[in-house]
Length: 138
Image (tube, rainbow, N blue to C red):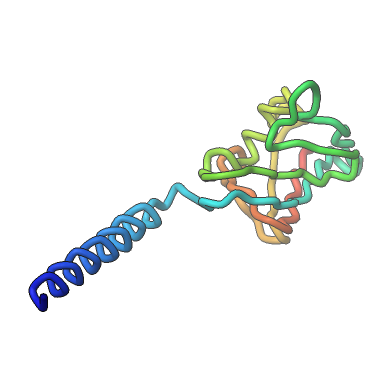
């Protein structure tokens, strides 16, 4: 009887240990931002000289709602993903792709700040909740 209990305990330990080990490997993927979805709201401002370029309402909305979209013209980008979310899905370039605009089409000498800090990731910048992103063109 002790042998059966010992074998049962060993099997349970192996199963639990294997599950934890497997989960640890899966969580170590640096390209995965979340496994349970996100609902984030970065803010984008585009300036050409001293003029603010409006970001239209309804980007990414239509017959089906894209996970990256806008509801109004406030510059708030809605990142509403379910399930596994990867960095490449959250890039500023992906927002411009959904919008159908070339990020560099607003002028020359593009500069970007994120939360007041200069940033040169541009299209590759991975947006986060609460980010204040400013693109400035001459």
